[in-house]
Length: 447
Image 1 (cartoon, rainbow, N blue to C red):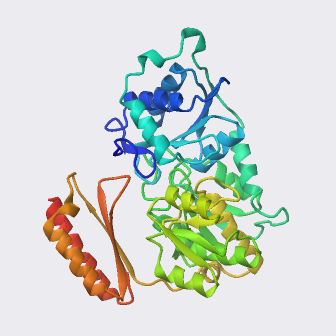
Image 2: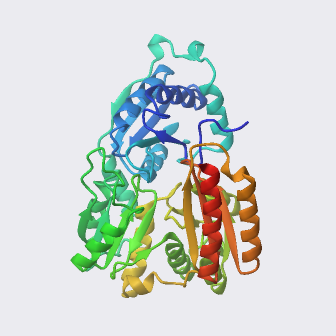
Image 3: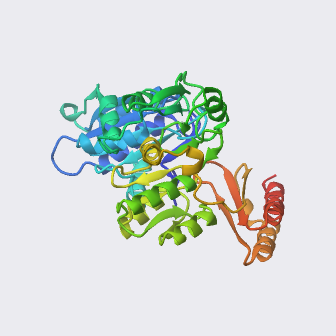
């Protein structure tokens, strides 16, 4: 069965376009029915980021869940990993995060977590999709069995304590000046406060959400403002989260960006030295740089690759027994602590290495020289540009030119109408030419 609603990270699209109140209501009903297992009183935790459309979707989902007899616990703006953690700790049957992650405010989305805080499997998502397209009038709750909704206070403190406990008790961030960019998103309250409690000299930016400015010229997808602030404040490090704080990018004291591959290298080597890796290796996606793979090999560690998407990374981690994995984009999963990517907790692991080594971030976070990697996006209006004959020919020619000297990866985004073209190899000029040729062919086919 093909997936009609769910992409690689929940359901996502234009607010009041694809993500309408009607759809949100139906998702609440369908997910509520799918997770009513047993005779106990069922409950769902709902969190959100700071988008204007969050109110509309939140209340529509409340109506959906309560109409099938589920109680709703509303926690307001909270990071995605916090919602996953709260779902498990509050013994809820289901967790919901209303967010379009790193997208701009016009979009929104619905991410679902099972009772253990993990994102749903493909099979469960298909079950919910089936319910979405079926009439469920006869399965609605009787009047006396309708659900209740209530707002829960104190959840910020719970997440702050959880995050702090991922560090050794005697480790303080005293002496570190940290610029934190919360992308005007879900972490704008909790993360600056947690850093302050850990002893850092905190300079917060991206902490004034107005419903429209989430991820706009800030956060992990636009780290330029963070780089400028780090240099201006002569800070030791900059941390950039995205709108729902499940991914992180760092900036060193010189204002240079540190991507997820370097962060994985830092944590992997540190955990290996401390005997904390559950297996001699980590999990990453096909997008991770060949330089990371070579570095890990020198450390006696494997790199297991998966398709793009943190859910596939996590599935491989669980099935293979790995406790560290992530994506170049900054989704870092530390399964000893969290059930999904947690940008802040990943940043804390790197800060711990910085504090222990007493070396600048530019040294700590440069573990390998990445191979030249070119990534370009081609936006389209639907259809299947990848099936075009000229596009297939350009891809085939590119693969032959890179044969033995690099690799090529072309894929459709699971979250937006974009085709991503990535080339990687020793010769930057060759890689760029191959990528540009394919992008040109895709552009013509998309037009």
